[in-house]
Length: 116
Image 1 (cartoon, rainbow, N blue to C red):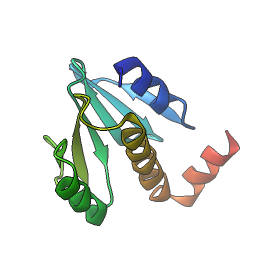
Image 2: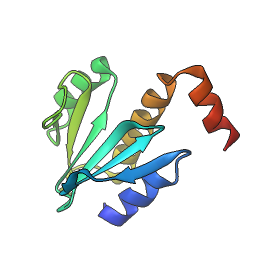
Image 3: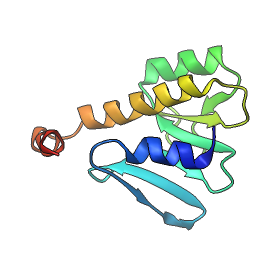
Image 4: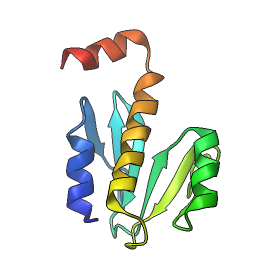
């Protein structure tokens, strides 16, 4: 997985912005102001929001999935970008993260996304 491919995948989703609130060291991808993905600039690791039960399952199954670095470890996973995980899996987890955040937005905010 390449950083630019990851970036394009995130930005292709409805209502997504890329921001750098922690200086230029970390790209933060948000939907309607809520984070769903973070990537460090050297692209060794990404953080993705995850359902807490699924988060534990993924950590137990894949060595490249660990509790979210500098994040709430119940709701976030860190994913190693070292080639040990299939890109399709990781993109699926990105989609899960986005969908999870969107599902928790207020109805009016979700309707705004549907209108895009």
